[in-house]
Image (cartoon, rainbow, N blue to C red; front, side, top):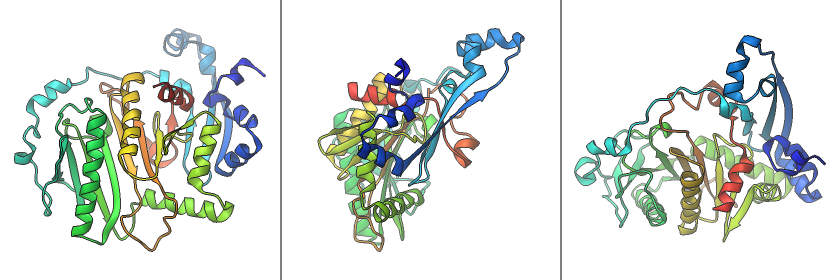
Length: 359
């Protein structure tokens, strides 16, 4: 066995799967398909100096190792090419967060934000505000007391989750037909945040869950019907067997094999509670301190607040977190591939898992 095969990497995923125990390998193949290919090209001598400066060597460019991981249950997939991390990126000086906050429109949120018809909710670290331009009929903000969006701590993340749950309950009580909750946190402009002041968002849908959450529910239900096993249990077991998953109390954490964008980490919790909030904080704090993440998206895929016609058996609280890149980068990290085909990923899930577990 080669040294490369002994060092876990997305580039030797197939070799690692071959070394799994039989039960783990069976679970893996029920969920994933992995293919490898080689991208080849010819670099002209006149271009060689630039290629060597940018990518390290001509050989690395002329023969590129590409791995494609596909989740055959959910339809999610990702294409990995580590060379993508070294490609030239247009950048400029990132706006200074303190300068941006000098004219903070939410410095006095009770004066400068609307409130929901059922009133404004608050705790020690945040308060709610109705969203001026709504995604849905029930869509509000959780505005942090700390304006700097990267100065969150464990207490403020716990407070955010506590306030989000209170908002879900209040909005559902005001409109019992609105029962499908979604939690989201777009941190800074790379992640789609239009206001610098730290905040998360909460929504409730009527009639059915949001499309991708409903698709995940259907996929998990079909998996249970076909294999007689819980999809989320098997997903966690596969990641754990590969060294990409670990547990903290009743929460399972995974460095995703099919990330939506860079460094995606999944958190599977029994409920959207303090333990889930701690796992979310641990992930974001590691992203911030160890992985250099400056902008991120986090989403909470949550089961409905009441009985519904659909089968939500065993559907956990699913938190998804992705890195959205340096604040000064001018080019977008999402293009036509991500929008219409499959994500192309530069970060290695095994490196992400290593950093998260070490922290």
